[in-house]
Image (cartoon, rainbow, N blue to C red; front, top):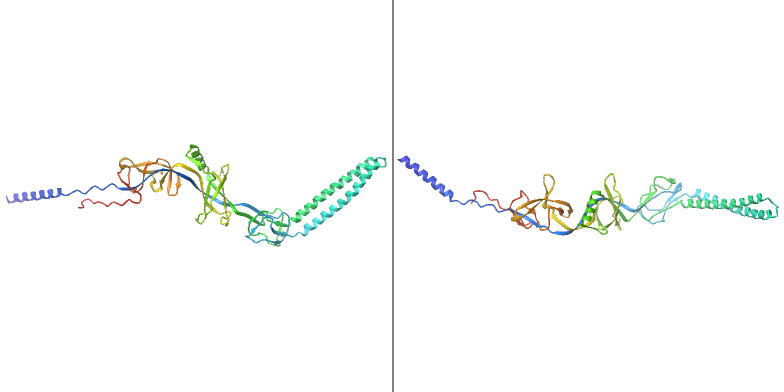
Length: 386
């Protein structure tokens, strides 16, 4: 009986403990996760394209000698500014002065003979009328007079040629601009038609920027214009980023594009002009050009943090559906505009795009939407906490 009473007591104690445990409150369910949401709207957006380019001088002239001779003097400062017609080099002109003198002497002889042959031809024409000379002799006199006149014209041309050669001994600047270093010094022998230029002059107050764009991008832009969603930019603007990462302060204008595609690269060359009053843009410099190609009138701009990629590389976005449930959308993006993507398919005006709180978020999850940058972390609720 004593043992039986102990068993009954133990059962009563266990029952009391069970009732006490059942009386405890269960931990509350965690609240829905908070996310930052942006409501998308349509707006007008310029279409930018960033392209690589090179600086090219508006005018470039390689100075070469047009006659052969020895350079006597150099009359410019390397790296300085020269004007068209300014004297740059002098070549020893002694041989060309002598050639000019010979040509002038030959012209004098021809001019002297023309009078004698002309008078003889006139007398023979008078004598042939009275049969004092034969007609053959008269014709020969006329021919000699004509030949003397032709000799005068030829010798006059020879004088002009000798004068031109003598003028070529003074080499002048063909254009205005900055002149480079001289590759030949006084005393050097130069020749007409040589491959090496004496120096180079470049006009850089205005410069060209030649950029290349893929043919596929140009086709996409033209098709978008034909569809009516994009309007062409009038006098397309171009901005430059210099090699050191700084922005060039002067805006340029797109002039034209090539009419053919480069078969080796599949790209088309575009040319823009820029004012260069300070000489900051140097020919041959590599730059990044941002070209405003058009204007998209009804664009959907989605913050970049709201667009991600799935395992297959497709662009996706998480939006809020009915009841604040998360939905996944596959989207198509055109290009970046600042910190946003231009979305062409998959999103529309009024969609609530999730841009914060995306970690471990799954479609179908009910969330608590809020403004971006105002989402706070929720405390972790541990099972068994009082």
